[in-house]
Amino acid sequence: MSKFPVACLIILSCGISIFLILGSCIYRSDHTELHATSLFNGYDLANPDLDVTLPSILQEISGLTDIDDHTIACVQDEMGTVFIYNTDNQKIERQFTFAGAGDYEGITRVGNTLYVMRSDAKLYEIENYTDKNYLVKEYPIETLILDNEGLAYDPLHNRLLIAGKSESKKKEHMGSRLVYSFDLVSKTLSAEPIYAFKEAQMSAFVKENKISLPAKGKKKGLRINPSAISVHPITGDVFVLSSKGGMLYVFDQESNLIDLHPLSRKDFSQPEGITFLENGDMFVSNEGRKGKPSLMKFQYQAEAE
Image 1 (cartoon, rainbow, N blue to C red):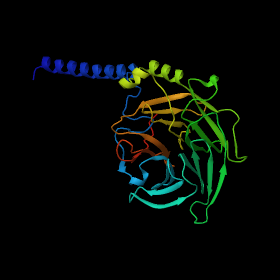
Image 2: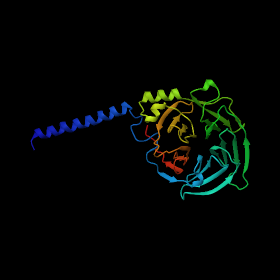
Image 3: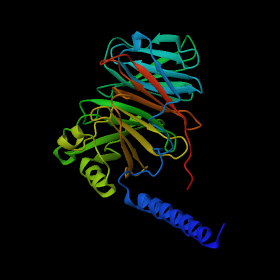
Image 4: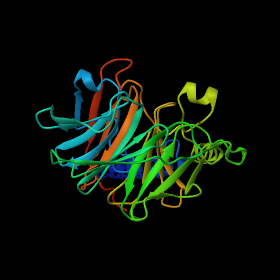
């Protein structure tokens, strides 16, 4: 082979490499999508590792919490009953009643104690829930929110987080969704909300990062109506599900917005529950009002810094 063709091939190869490198840099700096990879804060939301249909009694599953690496506890919003569900054999292993009929929205675990929240923010503490002689205590707390749906344990501060789906009764909190804390030592509610998720902050975040929203979201504007909340066991970030609008938000411990992601209605028909395993794996549950109730698991993949 003559020297001329070889030289041409070398130049052509170098040109292609430079083009690919520049193209990659342009893509990463453009941020037409916030993430250069398919992961959202360590999760491939388009490809769950587990996606199962739940039993019909959980048609209106409204909250869930981890028990161990293959078991969750959940509630549905009509019965004062806790269901213990095994993700390996996909069966309800146990169920027990802690109260009468009501609108139960959240559940979380603290050691061997479960906490369940009614929509009016009344808390039920179920001590030694693994024992048939479990003990139930009630805390009739009140927030400034009519519709409370999110409940989570915050181990960094030994407290529960209570997230309101609707707006506050106070005008000063208009355009925000509030989160109160329940101290697990004094068993008292914070006098003021500890977090205020501002819709204006989220809209500015979307604009700054050039995030593409679904057509419905563009028409009505970006809103947050927390249906579930959970604290990531590794990062400490606060994950908030908003079933209305189909969004997943991530905040830091100071309530600063870190990230958000529109959820596909095909995969997330009505997301109402979220929880994490100790290794970071995430579970999300969907109510079945527009189909069948489902449970999805997403393996945590720590992103390289």
